[in-house]
Length: 431
Image (cartoon, rainbow, N blue to C red; front, side, top):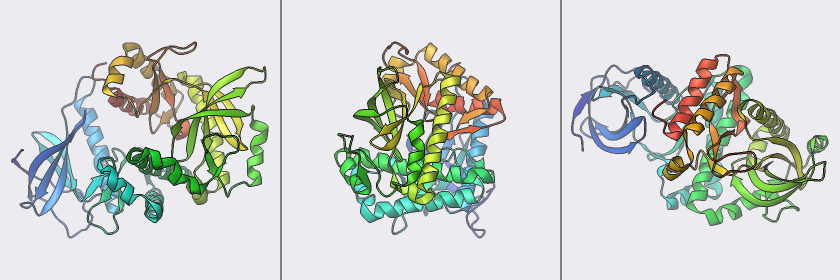
């Protein structure tokens, strides 16, 4: 327990102009979380009358400079202020320093989604309440992008002091200013990311009930032994424009991943030379996104994802893209089947077993090449190969999820943004 008293430096902004915390003391309580870059403490203003969260930026480690830390600090400060002003995040209280390290203070009237007990997740995100939560994420995403901003990464939290509880964005890290032509794309990305976080929490809380709880929304694929589901109400002729793109039909074998707007399956396709090729097949399924943006928009996004995937294949040794396949009458995108650990699943043991100097150098080369071509992945996801095959070696670094590939004119900025993300996930502390 730390009982030291700190003082605020001048407040940059507050939600309401008649709130002024400048110079008011606060106490620091228990450490509630520590990451590679930050320490989070509970605290309170004015003798405990207002609970707060204190996020302290740690001393830079090897390969990171103090300027890097301050740049991240200023970026997050700007993002938190914008979310506060738009009523999309916690109240921004102020800036300070703790043990000579910069720190940000926000209100503590919420629970992180990732910290919710399983029984509370199941209680909050079922039936009508789940529908309302999804609509809330959609409206908040549209409010943010219509203001000309986006947040490349974020976490979700549930408010404690509202009835019913509200979803808010926390830990935004960085703010991105949008051009008018990018607003729809970014709105869709934030909605998909937010809903994916909700459904990941649901799957963790009750894996056995996940498939059955979703099945009423969709149409069963006749060719799937797994009850794969897709758009029941969107069998419009726009689907037929994919028919001339199909390289063949796919036989689905097992589900290997489940996302907010798609399912990924292990399957077999028969190539033109008669060879049976094992593949990973991504198939659209979520009706919610299509209802907001239209089936045609979803299909266009799927085509853009194929183009982006080919960019990763060409410039970063990414997964081979075979093309579109017919999955029970629905379009699927077939990729090379990679055996490995996804970046979201990497444990401490995986890092020790799989990540070598070659992995790190391969990751750095991939990102440098991608940045040199003018591209950036706003949400870095990748695989580390976990066993040797004919084409891959254990420890290989493979970028994935190309849907969030954007064009950036500054290669150095793009590389630093992506490399910092990868470095944090792989816990790289030395160059």
